[in-house]
Each structure stands twice: as structure tokens, then as C-alpha cells.
Amino acid sequence: MRKNTILAFLLVAVAALSLGGCGGSDTHEQSNVLSGWQGEWKSQSFCLESPEMQPAYEAVAEKMGGAVNADDVHEAMKAMLYSSIASVTVAGDSITFTNAKGESATCEYRYVKDIPMPGFDGHFWKAFEATDAESPYRHVVCTEVHSDTPDSMKHWHFRTGMGMDFDALVNHPNVMWWPTLVAAETTVGVVAQDTTDAAEEMAGFFKMLPPLSKKREGTWKSYDTFLDDPLMDEAYAAIAAKVEGYNASEVKDLFKTMFDARGIVSLKVGKNGDLTLVMDDDSEMKYAYESHLFSPMPYDGFSWYRFEATDVVAASPYRYLIVSLVHQDNPAKNTMLHWHARFGKEGFEPLLDPMSSWYPTFVPEDLKIEQVVQEVKEGADEFAGMFPKK
Image 1: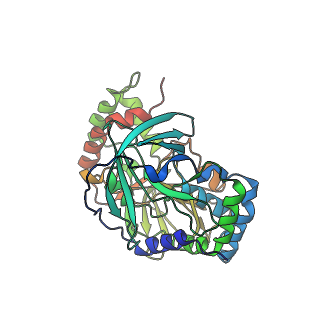
Image 2 (image 1 turned 60 degrees about the vertical axis):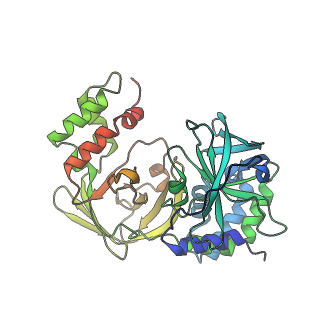
Image 3 (image 1 turned 90 degrees about the vertical axis):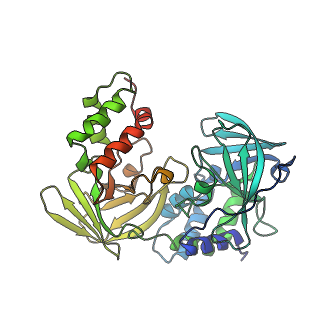
């Protein structure tokens, strides 16, 4: 069996658990900075819905020892490879990005520096910055073009995203995020064969998935417990001032729909991953959950981690659970730590609806209302952009 070396590297990265700093030394600008990436490339995700991939998913699932099925592996690969970019064309010192909607943007780049790749001793991200500071893809980090074996497909890994600088891209909390570009002529059959040949390594990578307790152990308060506080009125008014046709009361109603935890006041996460739900009638329900890998969110770098309760009846509204990573929306401003969760009884698919605006959110139990109000006011423009037009 051929060894897929990048997957071996990924295992090291996950095992590192803690991502390192953004080092590297600056170098002088030079021409032909993108000479090693010239040509047309497409996201490796192009093939993931093809029936030809099914044997590959089954091969990986088999190597995981029955812990997951082929559908779980399919979802995990979608999340690992997810990018809003469907294809790129590199010509000279410019990259043309095309998203899934067919919208394109061309940006000229300068090379900035090599940045050590956390968990990969001796390996680096190549960091490029757009010459136009207003570019939607101002910062890009990528690997060199490579093949994991002499016979396997040419590809390169990259990260970019609106609002993410080099540090955010390199030190992204989602260590399972590896968007990958392959040559435009790459076929589904080639990807399927490479994945099948690397099934053991891929299974090992997925087995390193962080447990439910990772960075969540302790008590987390539901964000919706703040929404009726009178101090929130000025935050609702700040958003209403940015959205045509909405008043503060309507903004509040939409917040209560978006963040509705459906009676859950807080969550207690045990060190073994058990979860206790504290309800608004003071009752408590405790569940143990097992992992079903992860699925993509419709945002670069973010995934839903999937769990199923092992000790509930089929009709329980908490049988299926998906959660985001614990994160901050703006680490530079030390905004609140939080994570999102959705519960349901009808399986994972309804919970994963990318069009859903339901985001129950859990925050540290000592979070103060004053911080909530301040962050909502500072994010009024962003919140306003989420509201449907009347």
C-alpha cells in the first residue's frame, strides 16, 4: 500500500494539540512569486458527492473499526476539505478565485515570508499578501505543490478567508481544516484511488478528533438567558439603527429565535464527555455521547462536530448533538469565548441545514451582561447583515 505522507503529517499536527506561533523572517519582495503554482486548479471537494467515492469512504470506515460508517467519513472529508473557493487560476503574480456561485475575484500578490507549520517540524506555510489592502482574499497561506507518492495526484493545501490574517490562518483552532487544490484535469477516479490507498492513515487522522470535553469541561450558560435583560435594549436599538424596516423590539425577537436554547439554561460538560442539561424548571438530564466525526459549516474553517447519545430512547429531543469548536469571534479584542450547539431527534441531517439561522450558544458561566451588551453594540453592522430584508 502506498503511504500518504501528508496524512501522516496531519496526524502529527493533531497530536500537537496546541498550535504554535507565527514565526518566520521577512524577505525582500521579488517577481514571479507564484511561479510554483501556475495554472488552473480546483477544490478537491469537487468529487465528494460522486458515487465513485463510496468505496473509498467504506474503506476508511472499515479501518476505523466499526466506530463510524461511510456516511460519517463522507461528511468528515467534506469538512476537512471545505472552502468557499471552488477553483483558482494562477497567472503571473495574480490569483483568480472563483467561488461556488461562479463569482470571481483577481488579486495580485507579494510573497511575505515562510511561516513554520505547527506540528510539522521543518515544514512551512508560504505566506502571500494581496497588493490591494481591500482584497477579499488579502492573506493566503499555502504549501508548495506536491504529490504524496510518485504515482499520486498533484495538489497543494491553502487557507484564506475574509477577515483572517496570517496568524488566524496558521493558528486556526480547527486543526482538521485542510482545504486542498488539485490540478484541473484530476478525475474522480484518481481521488478515489488515492483515498482508498490512504484509508489507514485517514482513519488514524479521524481517530484523533478532539473529544466533546476538549476545552468545554465545566459549566456553560445559555446565551439566551441574557436576552430579556433590560440592559440589552440599547444593543437592540443599535442594530435596529443599521437595518431598514426593523425596530428594537423586532431585533430582540430575531435574537430570541436565533439563540433559542429551547429551555436549556446551562450545560455541564464532564471530563469524560458526559453532558448534563440544566433546564429552566431546574430539572437536569445527563447523557453520554459518542462521536460521529464532523461536518462542514458554511464558513471557512468551521465545522460541526457530531455526537449521538448512547443512553436515550429514540424519541429523545437530545439524541443527536452537533457542536462547534470553542472560539472567539475576535481574539485580538478578547471577545467572549463561546460555542454553538444544536439538538434534535430526527438525525443529523436536519441539524446540519446550512440555511438554518438557529445558533443556540453557550458562554462561560461568569460572563457579565455588560460585556454581552458591549460586544453586540460593537458588532451591530455584522448582526445587521444577517437580518432578512423586509
